[in-house]
Length: 259
Image 1 (cartoon, rainbow, N blue to C red):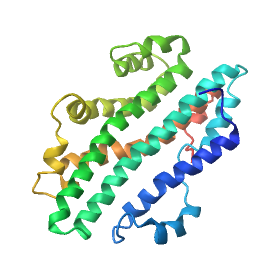
Image 2 (image 1 turned 120 degrees about the horizontal axis):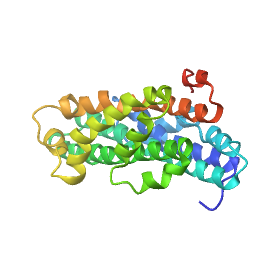
Image 3 (image 1 turned 135 degrees about the vertical axis):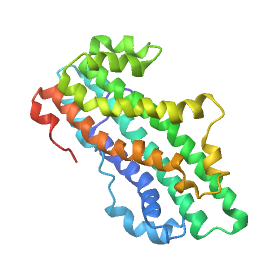
């Protein structure tokens, strides 16, 4: 990034991200609507929609006034904007898979159902890889803020997750107490989803393409939702708490919920 964007640019980009994910969430939550017919239905809802997670204006203000070092402020905002972008894209993959699932059940002819299963596989496997990359970005930003002298060692580590866990688990207990359950879940995620899809044959096709069950009734997908997708929403609030705590060192910031 060539210097820090302006507040107006951050706000405008956020509006584009709202539009990008908004129509997908809308159709995922309205399974009776035929998907991808945006003009007449989504256009009426679009102006009122906001994703509301990690608003870029707030992240811009945070970075701008974090310290007097403009270069560091630029780096912080770049990392935070990247997290917001990956958060939106990660969630959009999951909601897009839901739209395809709804279409397969409610609208597709028998001859079309495999096409929607392939679409689900595309989005779920992309979700898995994007979700894992998002967690590296969360960890990298926290290392950069909490242990800046350690950041280059973390970047170059063979296992960034292990390096992150070692550093934060030996640091402030109140901070690690916030992170511990999510890092434990991330280890489970790697074992059950990421390693298989990224480095092996992959398990998603068995459950999404060839299972006798509907894709979203399989343990593979329900566990992905319950153990990893839903907790991601919780972690967004925790991440906001951790951002504010490193700036203020006020323990109350670890108990506030940020919207």
